[in-house]
Structures are given as structure tokens and as C-alpha cells.
Figure 1 (cartoon, rainbow, N blue to C red):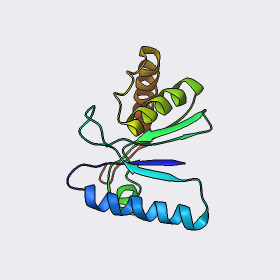
Figure 2 (spheres, one colour):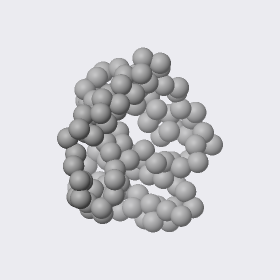
Figure 3 (tube, rainbow, N blue to C red):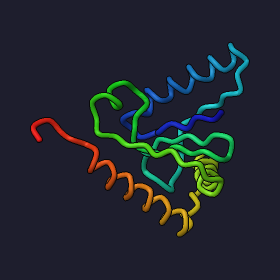
Figure 4 (cartoon, rainbow, N blue to C red):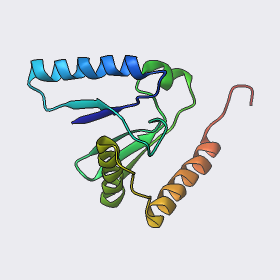
Length: 133
């Protein structure tokens, strides 16, 4: 497992401490986990949150991995089972991990994700009812 954290000025020290803690936990538990801060000229900060599992399933979204984000914010995450999409996100992560320029999104994947998100918004807007409506 590899965990890449943002190194923007406003979270750098906190995330550096988190990297140290993760590394200590991995070493003490003999766990195959690596963590580091993202260092790249290709982007200003890491904002997307994601997971790729077994080269087939990818989750990407805006949800911060804390209780506040899930319970109090309007966040979104999309889970996709697709080798092509998972491989793309893996390639982007690998480039970010190495501090390289990220690969561009293939047109087919971009259109597929746009269709999936658009469909989710249309379906969700018909299912959601807000207080007072």
C-alpha cells in the first residue's frame, strides 16, 4: 500500500508528521505500507482522494477521510469497476508518487466518467428531497 499526501504549505507539517506516524506503524507492525508527501511541479496540491484496488476497482472523489467531511460537507465519490480506468488512475498515481508529469486522461475514459457522473446527478436529483420541499 502506498499513501501520497499533499505537501501544500498549509498542511505540509501536519502531513509530514502523519507520514512519520504511518511509517512507524508500518515498521512496528511489519506492514507493507509506504507514505510520502507529493512533490511535483505538475500540480499545486493534491485535492482528489482515491483508491485503486487489485487493478480493477477505482474510487475517486472529493471526500476527505474524516467524519466531518462525510457527515457535514457535500462531497462525492465514485466507485468504478474497470481495468482501463483503474490502470489510468494507477498510472497517474505512479507519476505523482515519482514527482513526474501526470499522464493525460484518455478521451474514452473521460467521456465514460462524465457520463457516469451525469447519470448519477440526474438519478440523484430525482431521488433526493430536501427539507422544506
